[in-house]
Length: 228
Image 1 (cartoon, rainbow, N blue to C red):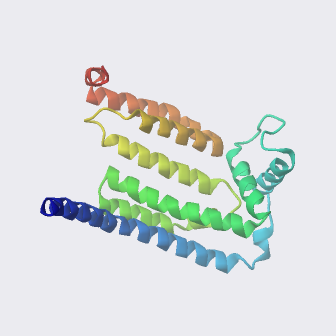
Image 2: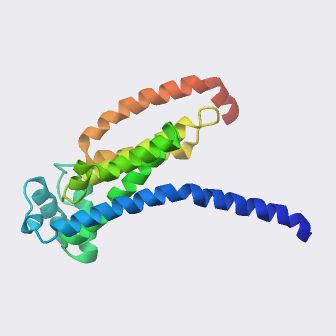
Image 3: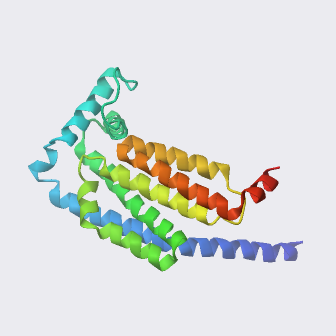
């Protein structure tokens, strides 16, 4: 019995080794993006301008403080996309009104976006293209700048990258039964994206057209047979 188990154990070890090896480039992209953003934060943290909130940043901060003081449900209709103020309020409730903490959280989210884009690019094209895309985003100056602002851009980029990854996964299911859970997740992410940036809702008809073409390609009849 011990001899029979050995090949299975070897195969399991081999699969684990391959997965671990394939994950390293994405881990490297995350750590690289994180390091670049931390260096940028260290360079601007002593600048008094970083604690000065203007325009939308000021309104998001005021809204977040109002959420903390008056409750999470709210008392009036939202006049802006509410996700980012609630995101700020969640951080404020953990570590007080600390903009350094907010920026550290956003740095992690921005670094994760680089990995998500790399993974999506790998699925859409190939691994080299995906890794280059993730590396470029990690170095993209406007992304660095907005990741450290008290602004919703960092969350918008994150949800866009998650959406791209989910849609790239869907393209690999064209010859099999679509997973309902995947489409539910696409809907949830798209809803969150819309709660961050209102004009993201324009993606709904675009994704609807994409889904129509997708289902047309694999054939409605095949789907109905498999669901029966």
